[in-house]
Image (tube, rainbow, N blue to C red):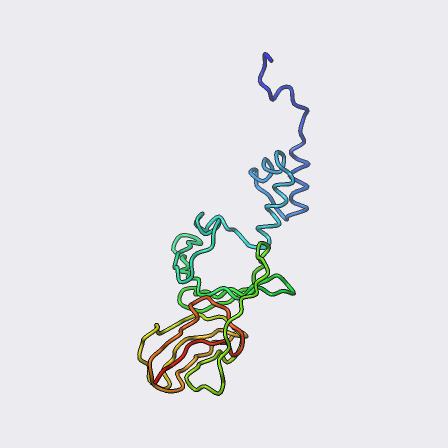
Length: 206
């Protein structure tokens, strides 16, 4: 080869590509034209992704590749002077019917909820002991949901009516209160856990 490689390529109609992209996606840049010319399938997959999730280039790489830990707070700068402060609160159970989960998080201090597809999740079947309704020392979950906050530890003293934990269910938050005064024991949940109705949250020993 005694000349630059581009001279040996067949002519390429960039104007036709530009027109096609405008018809398909409503507009394009020169970067879009070059990307589609070299990697058409990859570019189309990228456009489908951004149409569904938006511009994720503003997301820190760490959180693009992996989810944050429960309770972890991070910032996303959408544009200069416009910053979102996000914190993951809880991840709901996997729906066997839809393969989706509900995710609970804070955005600038306000609790939000979003439903996501979980394509990599295995079927979950974690069973928890049930609270005995005849035993006043056992505190059960009033309904199915996700534990978004636990306010006491094993061995803590509580008074009747004190909020032990906060449960998010059916787009509502519900406080699980101590039925009587005593000491917390057998605390079986943590923030981010999913529970079914009457699952044992803890025991309160007088």
